[in-house]
Image (cartoon, rainbow, N blue to C red; front, side):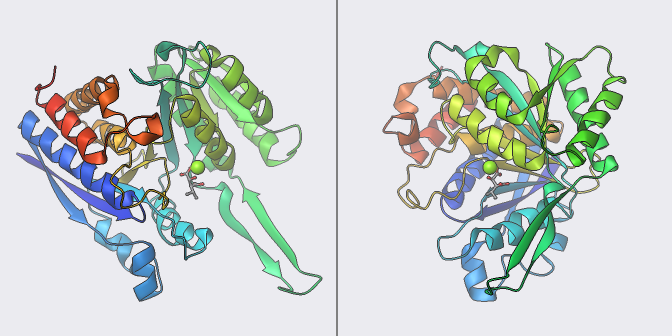
Length: 358
Ligand code: IPM
Ligand code: MG
């Protein structure tokens, strides 16, 4: 029997609660499917680790997870530690060296969930946002000089490479091609950002020629926010830079009903390194330890993890279980206006996996 080695990194805040729920569900699913097993190694990296060791993960941290089949990540962020330290010390310290350059964020209004958009039904909002995940505004290029003096200066330079833009465009066109509508929107800001974003547009046009069956258009990021709200039906696959997609994906998650539901895959498509799967939400210290975190974002991320491992049938079974459970308001956590607890949702999803609550 095939055993998948999963590295679980719960991280901070509600990360621990949702990742243990996710592991429980993966184990239940493996048992139900019968032909694979899941072996989980859990790593206690994050804010508390930082307080003891002065770093978010050990110096050889990546070596410890380098040969796992996939990584399941909770969230990083700690009230006592600056956000840029937690981000660069853990999440980006994994994503960037593991070259997980394609960040994929599907958005749908799941059964039983109400979109804040008036009159928009489930099937009218079905998007996948592809976020460039290795460079751009998150390249980390820049610096500060004359710190604390009146002449202090600081730069954050966004860095776009032809190779980096080509590969994310190709990934996005290929994904668009695999979806029924074969529709791609390339988000840009080449009116104001007249160097890198102009190159971004040029590369989109070149790569588009390789995909004659994909219909594509270009949208300035500011106008894109309007289109997402006013004409959600006109969008399908979306590709954007690291920062633009960061912002648009929060909007997308909110329009689909809750940040607690949205999943993410950080993919290394060449499979040279493990890919990493995580709910889009943060560490949410305001509700940490209360047992009310919504685990659906982690479950949906686990669907993406299973798909990546080639376990398509298991992925479909889990997604169907998730949709059955969101369709029942008794299992809505407070972020969805309900009273359910993390453990209620988890138990319901496991029952659905086992066909018990149909
Ligand atoms: C995301 C998050 C992160 C990001 C934060 C936690 C730094 O917002 O995954 O979208 O900006 O990349
Ligand atoms: Mg974000």
